Structure formats: structure tokens, C-alpha cells
Image (cartoon, rainbow over the protein chains, first blue to last red):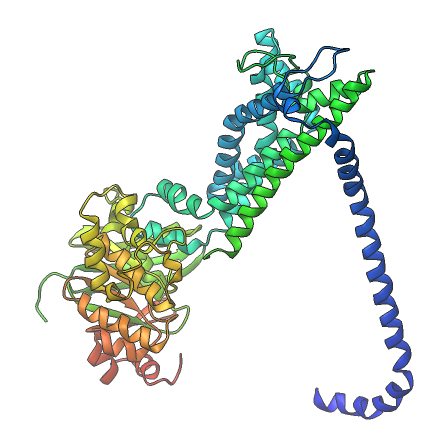
Length: 301
Length: 253
């Protein structure tokens, strides 16, 4: 090796001395161009986000008031009124959806991580992947067929079923990732103490990945809260307060949709306000998730 | 050496990982309240051997074992033996300290009891086991803190305390000091010396000085076979087999 390299090294200095500037300069230029391109792409990617934020905040901020958050919508022609019922309705439907989405999503994820190497595991993983690619409108149709048709009524529970189904696949996959991060040695430590496997999964493995699970759950809740299509023909809408699961229920997203396609300027204004409200809600959930994730990384192991 | 029945009797124990045979017809006995050291080069089956003794081996996907292991005359591999209950009788300490990161020092010690729903005077158990592992004075004022805040040596002693809290009869130690510095190692060795008054201990070690210091009996494994087994003194001074002599004198391994 050394002997082969030596004659090369002897010839190198002269050749290199003559040619050094050009490849070096070329490499620097390439670097500058590529860095510039990357910066440009980042800028292009960020522009829509900034413009959405700017537009929603600038047009929506005027609508925000205490009345807006606490009052029922005003009838056409009257000014004032709010989206109180839609805000509460969104929280209500998403809350109900959690009862369906969280147990199935987290349960499936734990199964995939702990027992998911067999045929059933592969089938579940494949199903979750396909399901996460299904457009949310289709899931709305499914919930319509499953809940609305038998009940002969639009209802909060139908909306919750649609959103719950929507939460399951992504939550299952992120739960699996989180649970797989727990070192095998911890699982073995628990088993070696004579703790049964199911208790080990529940009280050692899940407890260790709890921070990540809460994070994943919050993100999936945030995503569900922002959905319109699955609610259009399940929870429908309601002009009044509703806390009964078997009644049509207002939601921020459907309210925005209805206001936005209406011909009234006042309603357009309300749609912007509701959009800002939704953005704040989703943003808050994501930020909470981030804060939790950050604390988990910097905290004592 | 009394002629009492050994605590553990191993008869023609074989173990596989898939199609790879990791242990070949291992037969030996472990006397109650003594320390057996398992020595041998890496990959010789030492860890697999101790993991068979509490049936942890079979938890590895594709792994299986055959043969007979008697604990006080009861066959570990018979249908009537519940591996979960067995592991409460045969505790284990691992190579790297594996403290439960979400639990406090106190909760770590009590983990085995609480998760198994065993009731008892928890405070007394915490104090007793931490004193046994010489950790009490170092941690008594911060039992509520995370176990991860302790040093590596302290963590390993916490893991030993955790294993002792479920009151096992046999303690398996898989290179318990290999991730520790010499001072922490000395403390763990001292601890083993005290523990053998009450427990039967099987310790895997790479460190032959350690085997000499802590054990009464030594078994030398090579390529999945038990090459030689006898009192530690004999193995290290008058080994019968050439391979043993070469290994303990550092000619290979």
C-alpha cells in the first residue's frame, strides 16, 4: 500500500500546485450555489405558511371578542353573535373521538411494537398504512354509513367515529416507534423480576415511553380538530348549543366552511375569525406537544 | 464441601439460537450458598447458560433449550413450572445497569414487589435491601429522586437491590461489574461476598481475578461446551485440561 502510494506522492506536488486553485474555486462555487438553492427552497416552502398566518391573523383578529367566543351565531342580517357553540362543539366531538381513537391507536401501536413481527403484525401495519392514505372524506362516508344511516340522524357521535377512525393509523405507527425506542434491557429487567409480560408492557415499557405517547396523541388530536370533510355529513352543524351525543353538533371547521361559502360579508368576517380561532387551537396543541417532547429530551434521561 | 444436594442441578443442557447450537450437553451442580463463576472467552455460551437458569433464554426470538435443570429437585422446563414464578425465585443482574428511568430510587427497589402485587412493609424492605447493597448511606436522603441520577456503580448496586427485594433464592449475575470502574467493582465484589451467606450465586465474568476473588467453584466454557468444572482453587492452580490452563494463564481468550 505504502509503496504504491509513494511514487504518486512524489509526482503530486507539482501537478497539484498548478491545478489547486481551479478545483478548489469550483468546489466553493458549487457549495455557494447549492446553499443558495437550499435557502431559496426553504423560502419558497415558508412563504405559503407565512402568508396563511398573515392573512388569517390580519383578517380574523378584528372578529375576536369575548362575545365571539361565548355567543351563539346571530341570524342573517343581525350583527354580533359568535361561534361559541362551534368552538365547544369541536372540543366535544374531538373529545368523543379520543375515546375511540386513543385506545385503538395506542393499543394497536403497542401490539405492533411488542408482538408485531408475525404475520398478523405485518397485516396490521399494512392496514394502518393504507388507512392513513385514505382521504378523510371517504372516512366521513364510512361513518355516515356506519352511524348516521342506522340512527337516521346526524350526530356528534357520528362525527367522533369519523375523527376517531382518522386518528387510529397515524397514532398506531407513532406509538409503535415510541415503544420500540424503549431499550430491550428495561423489558428484560422487568421480566427477570418475575413480572408477567403484560404488566411489563403496561407498567414498564409504556410508562417509559409515556412522554412520547402523550406527544403523539396530542398531534393526532390536533390533526383531527382541523378536519372538515369527515364532519360535513356526520356531525353536520347546529345553530345552537348541543351536548347530546346523538344530536347534530356545530364544529369550527364546518362553521368556517358554511360562513365562507355564504354570500354575506358579515359571515365572511366571522369565517376569518373562526379560522383564526381554529389555528390558535391547533397551534396550542402542537406547541404543548413540542414543549412536552422538549422536556423529555432535556430532562433527567 | 458437604455432600448436600446441590441447589441447582444441570443435566445435559442444550441451547440453540435458530439453528446455531450455543450450549452443548452442559452438566454441573451449584451448591447452595456458594458462588459459581462462569469463565470463558466471548461467545462461549456463558450468558446463554445463565439465561437458561431463569428461562430468559427462551424469550429471544428463535431461541430454545433442551435438557434438565433442577432447582431444589424441581424441573425448570417441566410443564408445571411457570417461568414468571421461577424468575421470582431466580433473580438476575445484567451487564449494564438497567434502572427503570421513570421510577425513583425507592420505586426501583420496590418495582418487582409492586408490579407483582406483593404487599409488605415497603419502607423496611427499601432500607434493608439498600443496606445489603451498601447503597443506603449514599441515597437515604434522596429516595424520591430518579435512579438515573446515580453513578454507574450506584445504579448497578440499585439493580442488585431491586433483584434482592423480591427475595430470590438464586442470584444470576451476568458480568455485573464489566461496565464499572475499579472502585465500584470492588464494592460489587464485597457485596457478592456478603450475599453468598444467604443466596446461591452464579456469576459470569471476563475477569479471572474476579472469579478467584469471589467464587468457590469455577466452570470454564469454550465454544458452547463445559470444558472443566471444579473448585476455583483447583481450576486456577491445577487445571486438568490443557485448554483451561491456557485460558487461565492468559495464553488465549
